[in-house]
Image (cartoon, rainbow, N blue to C red; front, side, top):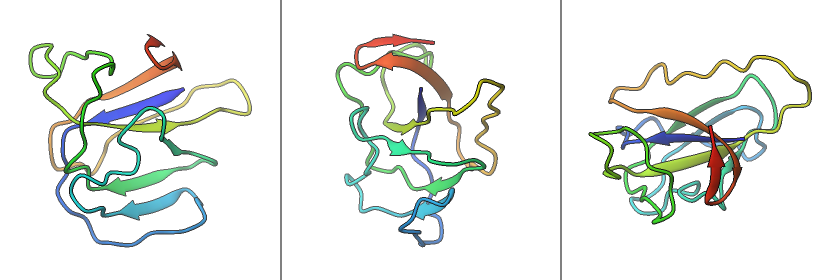
Length: 116
């Protein structure tokens, strides 16, 4: 499963945990968003998971799936997350704490072979 969040965030306090313990804040330089592409997602290893990230500079790949943001065009930057659950169940996702409009979409599949 890939999680996709779009639109730039405002800068947050800088801190980063080297071991992905489920809490992470990353403030990259503009244009250096580490999970900007489907092939380099931020891997969620454990739950609960919290991520505060400035996505200013995130881009949209030509094969990113089109979403309904802004009338259906691809006028957004995308960031990607990957999570493989160890058991079946319900996963609750939210973008609480965001100070900008965003859209959270869950895609299943491989690059360019997405399904919701």
